[in-house]
Length: 134
Image (cartoon, rainbow, N blue to C red; front, top):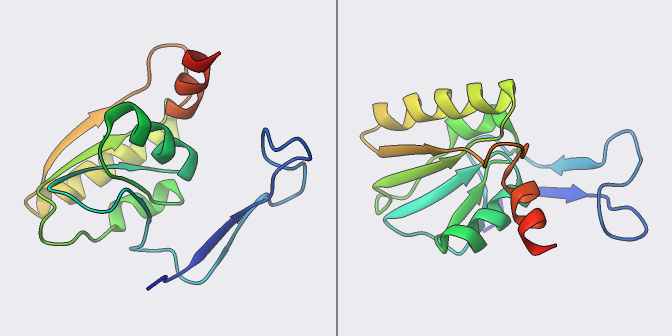
């Protein structure tokens, strides 16, 4: 059952976020929750945002969860079948800090954790995947 809704307003071409003050809005509590793409398995991927989760789902062929915010990632709760988490970190200071905080929290819960970063020159996995497809 859904716990919250996140809305992203797109530009007219549908190629990016709309030029509005808050292009992403949440309705309901997002802490501890994620947008789950591909369900759950013993190993899943976790990212800050939905675009990166969708990109890593395609790149890694494993379930990907979007935390809908850097600060939310460390609070995510997983079903007991999850044993290993791959964190897809954004290549900025906030993204790196969030990834390491989440890794520490997940390891403290007994999970195996790896942190992945996008290739050099890309700010996140969505940018990397988009460049590959051009």
